[in-house]
Image 1 (cartoon, rainbow, N blue to C red):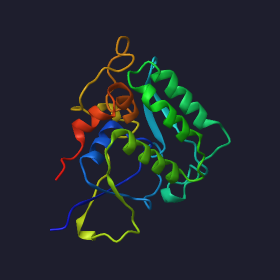
Image 2 (cartoon, rainbow, N blue to C red):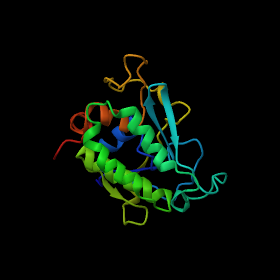
Image 3 (cartoon, one colour):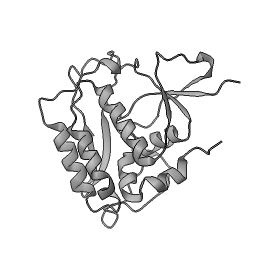
Length: 208
C-alpha cells in the first residue's frame, strides 16, 4: 500500500493548527497551482500584541484576481511591509522566553526580498523546520508521485474564524496577564513562548 502524501496550501508561517497538521504527516505536497484566494492565510498571519490579535498581511500585485495560481503571485514592495512586520513581531515578542534564540535568523529572513510570494512562503517553511528541528518531506506538483496516494487537505481555519478552534493546548502567552488566551494564532506565537523543542515533543511524528 503506497504511503499517503498530504497535499495542501502554503501559509504565511501558518496557524498553530496548520503546522500541527504538517508535523503529524510525513510527506507534504504544497499545491503551487492552487488559485490564490483573498482572506486566507496564504499571505496573512495573526500575532498576539498588547492590544490583542493583530493581522499581518503581505501585499501582493494584482490582488483582486483570485484565479491566478499562487506560484504566479508577485509581492508588492511599494510599502516597507517586511520591515513593519518584523517590527511588530519584535515589539510583541521581545519579552517572550524564547524569542532571543530566533530573532537573528528571523531578521535575516525578513531582509530577503523575493519577487514571488511562493518563494517567500517556502523560505518561511524552511525556517520553521530548522527552528522546530523537524522535517516534513516536501514534494511539489511536478514531482513524480503516486496519484492514488495523495490526500487533499484544505485547512478550515481562516482569518475570519481561526479563533473558534477548540482542543489546542494552552500555554503562557506574553500578554496573558492582560488578555484572554488567543487560540490558533500564528505558529510564531507558540514558538516564541514555549520553544521549538517543546513543540516538537508534542507533534513530531514518531521515528520508525
